[in-house]
Image (cartoon, rainbow, N blue to C red):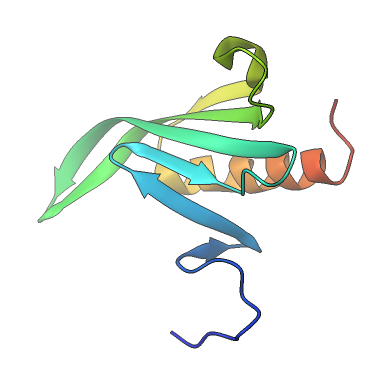
Length: 102
């Protein structure tokens, strides 16, 4: 993977935002911004040797550490696969960061 000296993050980038995975949680965006997406893989199925997500919870959240966790959630949805979850995540995060959300 090629990198430049001024890159702030290492790892996966999807549509200009970083992706971080911790067990069954996937964080999309950065805590330095006002909003972040949290995806939770709720169920999977085996396809050959891979676990494939069959139910993913998606939440648009504020990153404000002073808010209670339930008060940070602005939007939530459930999707049938990771592709659909990433698709809606990208749309929600871009709209929120551009000021088109609350």
